[in-house]
Structure formats: C-alpha cells, structure tokens
Amino acid sequence: MARNPALSWSRSRRLAAAALGALLHASLGYGAQVPAPLDDRDFGVPALTRGAVDDSELDSAALRRLLGAPDSIVVVRDSLDSVLEEFPEWYYRDIVVSLGQDRHVEGVLLKTSRYLTARGLRVGDGVERLMKLYGKATRLDPSPQWVLGDGIWTYHGIYRSSREEQEPVSREVRELLQMASQLFGMIVWVRDGKVACVYVGKLTTELSAWGC
Image (spheres, rainbow, N blue to C red):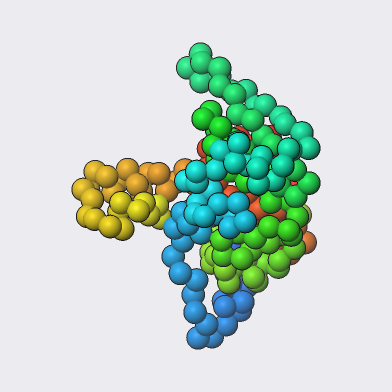
C-alpha cells in the first residue's frame, strides 16, 4: 500500500512537537525559572544595536563606521504596487545585514558564534540552551529528516515602545502594537541539535541569505 506523504509529514510534525515538549520540560528542569515573556528588545544584537534590530538608529553610514566596508553587497529588488523597491544586503564574514528603503538596518543574520543575541544565544548553542533563553517557539517547522530539535524555530514578542512604558495608550494604539509584534522577531535554524544560524529583525524582510 502506498504511503500518503501528507499524512507522514503531519505525523512527523506531531512527533516533533511531542518530543520537543518533552525536551523543553527536561531542559528547564523541575522548579527552574521559565524564560521571561519576549518583547522586541530581546530580538537585538547588542554588539550592533542598543535595542531591537528593526527599531535601531543604525543606518548604512553608522554600520560602515562600526564594521567597515562589507565584503559584498547584494541588492534585492521587489515590485510592490508597480513600484520598484530596492533593499541592500551587506555581507560580512560573520553576519549579513539587511537594510530598508531608508538605509536603516532591518535585520541581521548571524552566521558564526562571534555575535550574540540580546539574550545571549549564539551559533553553535544546543537546543536546550535555545529553549532556556527563549522558551517555546511561536512556530516550529521540523526538518523532514530531523534529529531532535532540527528545523526552523520562529519567535515573536510583545512590542513595547518607550511611549507605551511611560504613559497609557488607547486601545487602538495597543491593537496596532499587537499587530506590529507579528512583523518582528527571530528565526533560528537548528541542525543536528545545534543552532546553525540566527536571524533577528523584521520578519517581512526577504533576506536572500535566509537559511544556512
């Protein structure tokens, strides 16, 4: 009898979710503190930005002063409503930086262990450390040939603006902030139980270098 690939994939996803749930329980340990709720400040790269990557004041000029000239630049072109937009990607040995139309940083892909995320995650860390630092992923896409934890982990957080912290905001503003929270976050690629690369920033950014 022929196997249904869709059913096999669905079963793999269920098995992955169950196994990762058990791994999360084991990695946190009995009585261990659960990671604090995520917000946009957890999706930064302290060596480059003070807060969230996509909320930083880091532009192309400041980036060049900080890291020097990139090894190469790739311009991604996207046509939206018949308007051609260009998004430069600056390639360095350890990272790829995606810039927006205004030439401010929108996202950073960490390729090596040189740089850390705001919570201390780096390339090469195990799945246990990933979950201790960031908890359960918002979405998990397990690899078809997955070893425990292998796949793509996506995280979202609560958007907290300085204005929101300093004074009350209306329900409409809060709803807009909640919608904005789906537009930023972190994607982690796990291979053989280890973090292979990490992207932080706007999730709407189409990095041509996504993945590793």
